[in-house]
Image 1 (cartoon, rainbow, N blue to C red):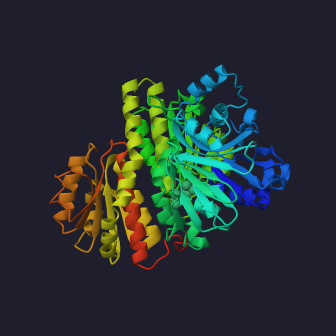
Image 2 (tube, protein in one colour):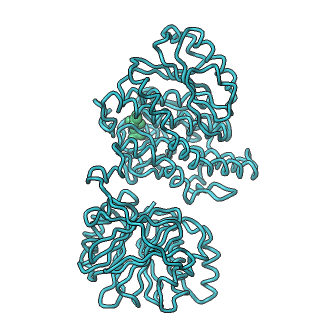
Image 3 (tube, rainbow, N blue to C red):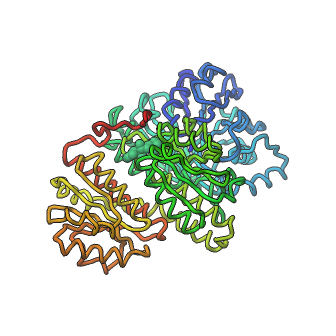
Amino acid sequence: MCGIFGYVGNRQAGPLLVEGLKKLEYRGYDSAGIATINNGEIEIRKDVGKIEEIERKVALSSVGGTVGIAHCRWATHGGVTQKNAHPHVSLKNGISLVHNGIIENFSDVKARLEAKGYHFETETDTEVIAHLIDSHYRGSLKDAVLAALKELEGAYAFAVLSSKEPGTIVASRNECPLIIGVGKGENFVASDVPAVLAHTREVVYLKNQEVATLTATGVELFEKTGKKLRPDVHHITWDAAQAEKGGFPHYMLKEIFEQPFAVTETTEGRISDHEVLIPEIEQLLDVKRIIIVACGTSWHSGLIGEFMLEEVARIPTEVEYASEFRYRNPIIDTGTLVVAISQSGETADTLAAMREAKEKGATVLAIVNAVGSSIAREADVVLYTKAGPEIGVASTKAFVGQVIMLYLLTIHFGWRRHLLDEQQVRNRIRDLRLLPLQIQQILDEREEIRKLAKRFATRSNALYLGRGINYPIALEGALKLKEVSYIHAEGYPAAEMKHGPIALVDKEMPVVFIVTKDDRTYKKVLSNIQEVKSRGGHIIAIASKGDKEVNGTADEILRVPRNSYLLNPLLAVLPLQLLSYYVAVERGFDPDKPKNLAKSVTVE
Ligand code: F6R
């Protein structure tokens, strides 16, 4: 994920570009840069580091000119170096360009451009777009962009300048977000709305493969055929706080809605049709055993990881509460890989467990969301979940990112240890690609969950039950409910409940079963539902669409689309997150600020 910002008008662009970048820094902070057109010449400043550091080093904001583009990067193609930082240039026609996304056919296009004499300076796919536009330039930057789009495959949002047209920015997108801020005597382009709100509330949401040209006096819009379109300008009514929340009433809901992106961003650059790419673990492929250490929701994702790694990659895996692990004198040898999972990368217990493991000679791989955090810095290998900043105290999208990363690790280990053949890898990647749309479907059909929440909100206790790979989802559902609605809830393995918790069941007790179709425990869970039903429990089932067997057993059924048994948990968790959120709101609590909880637990 990267951030894009552009300005054209009559004010000095430098300070505005830096201010816009700061609003977008959550999208990427390993490097940043800006390009302006100053006295007819392209002027570029860029470097690695956070925006503040780069500003101190190279004074980004003092670049001259009243038109410019800016970028904050989270590397996917090419390492974190000054050279690979954006903007990228193609000098024949004074082209400079910033880009978010991945050009999938970049090596083919690159080969064609090299044959035409273009020389590549960087390892990025972005440079291909700059040269491609340059190669089509015949006096109109907009026409060159339209011609280039025909040759580009993949996801992109970009903004481009040419020193031959000093008062114009051209921008386009496909699958990656990009908006135009329409001002008075000035216009803006940005990766999201909050970045322009200090200047304008009039916004055009660019659609896939549309091309926009921005000058100080206007915005023109074209479809990919070159046909002119009338821009559809939306007036943003959100206040500043709402803007940060993307128009949602709470961060928690915004972040639940960002989960399709958490999947695509975390997999970006890591999958092709037939393989998973995790070059970072090349030295770790023959590990004998894995110990996962984590806390809270991250511990739940670890439990799903345990299931996947043992089932598919056949690596003995244990999951430990980080806070218990270090006081147990754990047995670790050089064949042990310790995997630390953390959203914040700052959780004191996870950090301490990881240090303990390193001291005992283990290699530590961290799965972390917050770039540059302590756990990321101290691990031997770090894999970032790219869920974006998680502000809501209750973790939602980071959990999805973690499970996705564990799934990618599992396929990679499975393939490299010859337990999956190429067709199986293809199938698992195909399943993964279905997920964002399936998540979106659940979000679109949330009304039923909201209605259920009204009834649920009056209860004082709840039981969440699941088996196998869905057992951690029962734990996660119960944790989410406790955290934000303060209703007491327990997650339990569905069959284990008859060894105790079933004593609590009566008609006042909602019992939530996760009973998705493709799990091998499906039939067993149906029997567990019968056991609870016969004791008068009120049963809510999270079940697969099209499953008729569950009808008649449960009092209420929330349906989720069907994927593979390994990915179904990521669909089952959605209604539980939404249920917790709506129950909290129904009970009058602010889900973003649960009492007694901190986002990052930096004390032991
Ligand atoms: C639950 C939640 C916490 C965190 C836990 C670990 O919604 O957010 O349980 O999962 O405190 O935090 P990280 O993942 O930052 O190490």
